[in-house]
Length: 498
Ligand SMILES: O=c1ccn([C@@H]2O[C@H](COP(=O)(O)OP(=O)(O)O)[C@@H](O)[C@H]2O)c(=O)[nH]1
Image (cartoon, rainbow, N blue to C red; front, side, top):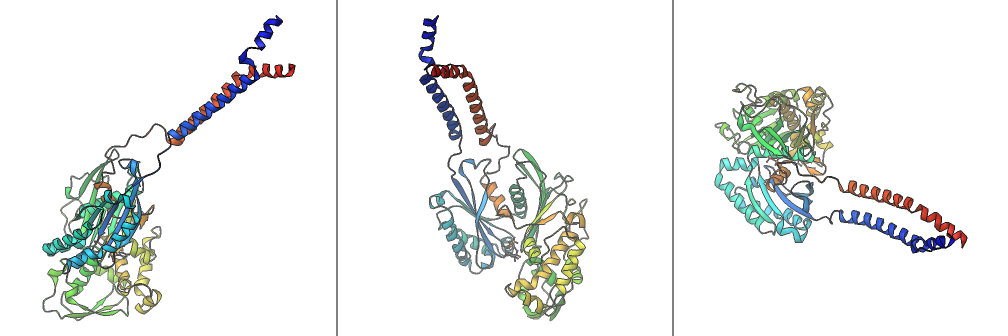
């Protein structure tokens, strides 16, 4: 017996050294398992791709740089705006008589883009230029001048190492639809299949309204319908772009209506009392939106004088909308079909600039209060306005009473927002650091960045995978310790004997 026990106690597997070695190997194996799990599944160091879009608007051009993770461009990667640059000077359509200057005007912002996009990425970075209502109007008025402006702009953009993908005029429908895509993409509504937000875009020369309505399937007025399949969801979007109803052209329409007889003085309720300026008839009517209405035998100039009256201003503005004919079940204005507005809306571009300046972006405030504030603002003397805002350019400052009144009139009379649906509008400039506007949606579309079907997602996210492996490793370790417990007790006894 005692010889037998001696043999057992001397078995090489039962010595304290062996037990310590087994324990150490066990611990090392578990640590190695967790380390491999963590490292193997760790995302590779992030590489980025870039895209540049130039928004050639009627009043100005802006450049936007977007960035997204390189290995995820086809599905899950988030595209973000990393930089924007406002081109100095007017929009490219203003260079019709000097086209090469249109190209030259873009170079400062393009040099900035060269600095912002890593040098080794220049050649693979797509560069797009999209022109909106300013060029739509120039093209209508003088298509060869518009072609020359595009030639000059293309030549200037080809001087850079980026992958230039062309310059073109967006249709009003594209402008509306891509604005809607941008807002809903940035809000993460498309990927998650959530209720979408409508988009209200106010430019200088045109304005767009786009939203999904349960009452619109595209059968009535199909030209207002855009269908998308994004991340596995189908959308039937209502969209319309009103050319000449951007805020600058709407001001011309309103003034044109007050100058039909070619008067020498116009008393304008949309401008502040005390404001007075000599303006040229030729300049006022120098746009296809109003050129056909130029009064015959009018003097060269008129004296534009403000009277500052919101109510009367609204009456003048209402007259630029035609509500008398509609061949559809319902219309907004000028005989254009529009279903009842539905759901939340984001209002951006000039909607935001104007309402932000007027401190009227809080839509939880009742519409009657908003109108009261604007009434007071419009009634403020021009001398007081200029004294309060001496840093704002006089041309812009003079137009805020008109612009605010136009926005409220367009929304409530034109699009039929009620005091209840008005409260669902949010005036926005940016969403999560990216500007609201058509440019991001345009680039996402041209780079096929929004898949039609929902992307396959891995069964577990990285963090979940690592946690499960760690928990399993700890459990294994506990089981292992428990299984060698008898050996530990014998080992300690042996140590005792020794
Ligand atoms: O910082 C800014 C930039 C633009 N705007 C106005 O917003 C409108 C934007 O017009 P855009 O050139 O984009 O016109 P579109 O080509 O879209 O009609 C114009 O009335 C501008 O005067 C503004 O009030 N503040």
